[in-house]
Each structure stands twice: as structure tokens, then as C-alpha cells.
Image (cartoon, rainbow, N blue to C red; front, side):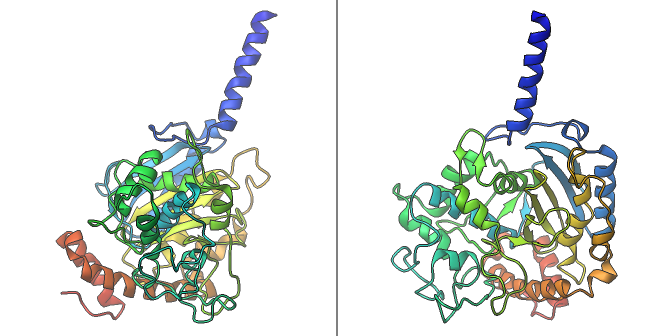
Length: 395
């Protein structure tokens, strides 16, 4: 009887650990088989193969379930440590960094930017940081009528986020140094390279690995909780970051939170959010299914909206655990988004293409100003994209 009781307690302890475990903290990742976390190895493998076939230049695919890596594959010479340019995926990282500063009491996203930063750039001086985070900071009619105006390069308004950190941190650190100490180190980021001298560009310029991106995605997936640190981002900030703040405003190109793209009508997870960069730098966050996926690479196709759409649509059904009501749900409802020809005809695809074009214009501005941050091969690849989209060559 005593032995039976001990076994029951041990089993209960293991179950409690599985339910309460929420990620690696600042230590190494834990690994589990898909089956141990209620998933299927076969379906995850099929998802990776479909994504690799549907999206060009895929280099990695990682699946995190219940805080553990359950699937990981690298292609085209990429490794665990490889760090590559994230383009506008950087913006979502900037949201996380600013959220950390909020949690440490430097201010809130509802504060007005004037008086909190050294330069308001092209932001409306009446803008709040929530306006900056939602691409409405340049609206001429604030606070009453926000307008979505995408800041591709980050130089028009978005960089006030890093200026806020530089201006308000009591240690007097530069923004990159503060980011390393108070954000990257606690998250356990090992390969991320972000910052130029005393500047932390928020529109692009971060290089990171697939595993590091998964950590930042998991932080949002946990609604700001981080193992060993508690509420690393305030829960209010993390959940609002993944909420459509200004639906229906002029100029919008889709559901948008705090520098995160959303899909509020998704059939598998309407709480879905996404960190998205040019050429298919995609981190998908599913809070409903306690999962994160990362698909990076260099898709050079004409439709910049397709890669991250496909990475989610071809992989999302495999993230649903056996004990969830949506397990084995039909893929029919998302068929249009799994077919590239049908996808290109949707209003959502048209909106994303518009965004991608403007994002590339901002990216070109950033690249021209920071050519020494890229290898010659990277510059050639990026320039091909610019020319294909009708933008002037950087050479």
C-alpha cells in the first residue's frame, strides 16, 4: 500500500511538472517526443515537408509544445547557432524589449512620448507609446482618430521605443547594453546579434537563430511569464500586445497588436499571433495550443505574404494535442489559405502584398544606411528583391 501511494504521488508530481512547465528560462531547452506532449511525429514531419515544398529556401523548422522542443529540422547548411537577418521580425522583438522596460517600472505603453524620449522623430507629439507600438504614432489627428501608417525602416517613429529605454533606464546604459542585460540574458538568447554602437534599431537589423526566436515567441505565448523570472512582461502588456487594438481604422492592412500580426478568425487558434520578416522569417505563436513554431529561410518569390501564411496553415493542425476538442478537425476550412493560387486571390493576400512592398521600401532605407552590417552575398540577395519590386538598386 505504501509503495502504491509512492507511485501515485510520483505520477502526480510528473503530471504537475508537465502542466506547470512553461519553458527553459535562461537555461538550455528541454526536449520531448511529440507523443509525450500529445502530438504526432508523423504529422509534424509531414508539416515540415509541406512547408518546405510550398515555401522557397526553408532553412529551419522548430516546434515548441508545452515549453519543450518536440521537433527540429535544419536544411541548406543552417545550424542551431546560425543567426541571419530578421528584417521586420525585429519589430516584434522591439515590442518585447519595450514590454520588459514597462515591467521594470520605467513607464507604461499609455504614456505620451513627449517628455519620455529625447527625439519624437516624425511621431505626432500627442502620440502614446501604444500608438507607436500599433503603427498609429504618426496619425495627424491623435488622440481621437488613429490612422495606420507602417514605419518600415523604424526611423520615422518606431525608434522612439529604444530611445525610451536609453533615456529612462536608471543605470544609464545604452539601449543595446540594456537589452543584453535585462532582456537577452534572462531569456537565454545565445546567438542574437542586435544593436549598432549605442543604437538599437527597431525596424530591422536584428540577426537571430531559430531557437532564439522560439524563446521570444514562447514569452508571448506564456502571456509574459518566463520560467525563473515570473511575470517577465506584465500579463496586461503581453495579452494586449496580442490584441487587435484599433480595428477598422483608416489605412490598416490587417489585424495588428503591438508590432505583432494577428489572425482573429483563424479556425485552429483565433488567439494566433505572428512575428514576420521579409523573405519568410516566421515565428507563429498559438496560445490556445501552447505551441510556437519557427520557419526561417530565404523565399525570393513575388508574394511576400505567402511564406508566413503557408508556414502557419501547413503546420497548425499538427499542433493540436490529442486531448483537445479541435484534434483531428477538418482542414477544409483553411483550404483556401493552403492553396497558393487561391491564397493570391484573397483580400488578405492583397493587403499583405501592399504591406510587404512598403516594408521593403523601409528596409531599403535601412540597408543603404547600414551596408556594413551585411555580407556581400546578403546585399546581392536583398538587392534582387528590391529590383524585382521596382525599387532602385542599392549598387
